[in-house]
Length: 504
Ligand code: NAI
Ligand code: MG
Image (cartoon, rainbow, N blue to C red; front, side):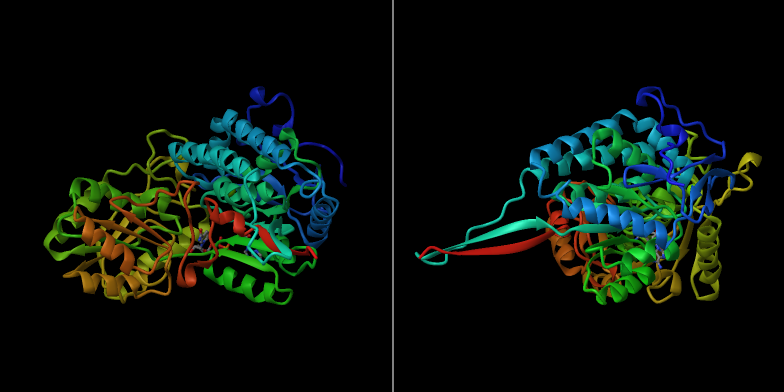
């Protein structure tokens, strides 16, 4: 059952490997340095959302498989295989190699990502470039994590040291599959933690490729494990397993709340990156030639499947008609299609379930008092008839309607007029979420006053959505707990210890 057979794409020299699509490959997952099936033998299919066609068959892991993966991660953490017995610079060297391997396979990984989650190829190329940089960035940090020596008088010394938190269960979503995985895997490995990664069931392919890359880069068997499967079967056992020290999760608020509750039993450390209903504020003096495309991409980019999407578009009354018209023109100019077509600017949603969810929100808008201002067209290519497309949709709304309150996670904008700063700040903050905000104005004082008044973890001024790995990411309020990216992510994977020495 635990044969060391490799998936088709993991054989041969990497440069020559071409992952051919459309075949029903029986892929395996990666546990303790071996490519394995689920112990039960169960499998599930991952599909191409542009066509609905099956892409590959994937092991459907259950608690038996999670047990093996956690045991491997526990063993390699406790015996120092990756953490305490390895020089930081040696860990760094392996992570730098992972970055190189990702970069060398950028195109192939991007195509895999497009096939699995639907996004346009140009966007996927950008995601994979950032994955490579993410490994490089945290490789650099591996040799720079230091503690402190606080003063405690002449007769003693106190050393504050940082240590890896241990075995990390990393549960990631399907909207930026490899990037969300790297955002957790890279800092976890850099600090000396060992890892069990659970990709989303909709998009397991690039996580499996990350395992192949880790293996090739020289990560020792057991340090980095990937269990594929359904959340309740392959993710949930990580939450209750006493061998797991830390859970880092990105996904829906409902699952995040359940994770926090479940992990409380063992007081596992928890980082949560959840949803949002982020305000995008266009002031009267904004440079509309930049604000209109930026605002439009802030909600229509990545099909709107973005936790920080600027889904509530607040526009000053004096430019309201111009911005609404500009967004409509922008939406009408978007080209829906297969993400593999370089002309495509909007792909399908990730799954039939997500399409239906988003469509139900669109259907609820008019009944709730919102006015449909624009609805785009599905692609007419018969080859895409089975795809899960939802065209860009714009509503004129108020802040109280359901489509302006609940996270839709699709290309649906709620455009809402405002008259003054107080009003727009009050409406912006009138949400349970607090992930991000975008502000468009040429008045620096107004921009910064607004940035400070908005209760959100990330604020963009005259831009929307950039999230460089060197910076910081995370939400206020019900958008999450903890921080990712930059040096802030390291804290999520470190414990702090004090060693007190009596010099007497
Ligand atoms: P989800 O929260 O169910 O899935 C995210 C990850 O959690 C996946 O890997 C899934 O397998 C895992 N998971 C699900 N149930 C689990 C459980 N009981 N125990 C452990 N792990 C579990 O999100 P879903 O259902 O795919 O999407 C629903 C909505 O969630 C979206 O419409 C969107 O509003 C939101 N979402 C937010 C994301 C974000 O980046 N903040 C990403 C994905 C979804
Ligand atoms: Mg898929």
